[in-house]
Image (cartoon, rainbow over all chains, first blue to last red; front, side, top):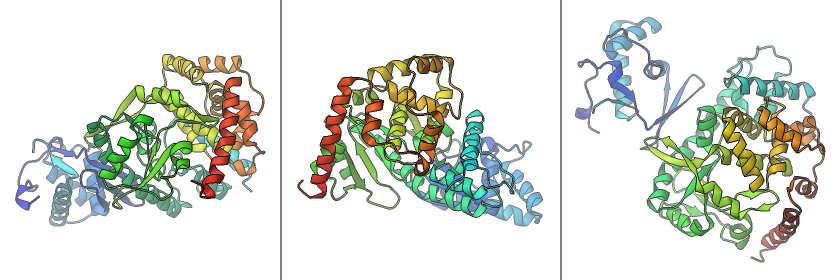
Length: 110
Length: 346
């Protein structure tokens, strides 16, 4: 899947209800993170730290007060990790792009 | 030697879990934590406990080990289910992560080292073809008549490390001997469980209960810790509606598993209340050849339980005299065949 196929997480108004965990993603939490497998590709992933935080927010139905998901996650990361807005936006963008690329989350309708 | 308090604590944990299926928090200074943890691990029940400072590293290692075996098992199921269906082979996946998901809503509640799939005897060869075309290879020794005829199973090694070993079964084994007729009933009605956009066939609740009864009996006869199967059965029975329980009693009688069912119910009663219907069934089939405390100990701590001679167990758990004759004949035949196999006669 090429980079041009991925939605631009930061520039588009993607809301939580449009970002869904893939039906092929199966996860198990242990230690200080979550391990996830993509059934379709048989690829395995391990998320810790910020990536785990993002995954939990996505999978536990966190509400972002009608903000686009990117903005909501960035604000929450900023609060939780006490980092600057730039750092949190960069980290969230990176995590979401990686999750999309791995097929663990999808944008509904795509 | 595991102390009695650990056994009592395990029983209490199991009771609490059946009542409220969530991992339990124990205080960090719980006495005999090590003994309890050892007992939980032996019975594949490590996930009954919440993460705990004293055990955290071991709990993480335990869960990581489960992940490392169950993830390939899920990949294997995801790969094979559509292939069996494309080839019109009736099948069910038994035990494994699908059963765990059904009972605990968690594919990773405990480890599943391989994938067990049951097919009819007439489809055994075609199922073998499906597996070999998918890249699985029959393990050495399995091609012998002993494995094919007496054990009724074949083991297949995976082509890649992303998949796992497949155990292909054609018998549902009552420990007193194979029960060919009843096997068909396990395939006649199945449930569908979704997995990653596909779905796979698994046993109905009634058939799952009967399988668990057989697994418990087999555990007794092989002196294995099977507390996990006891919990599985207790959880399942609490979910079954009255009509399903009534059918379970009827099916058990048809499959000559009534005494085995009652033995299992007595064990379940140590950790969960039974419905009035099941209690009534137990009263009708009063059995006192073992106390419930001894039975519980046998299931979770067989190394410290009294001796259960295999033949005596077979005799005590056969429903009918006809079954007893067949069971004894099968047991003798099995021993001869096993010795012949190891002596490489076939």
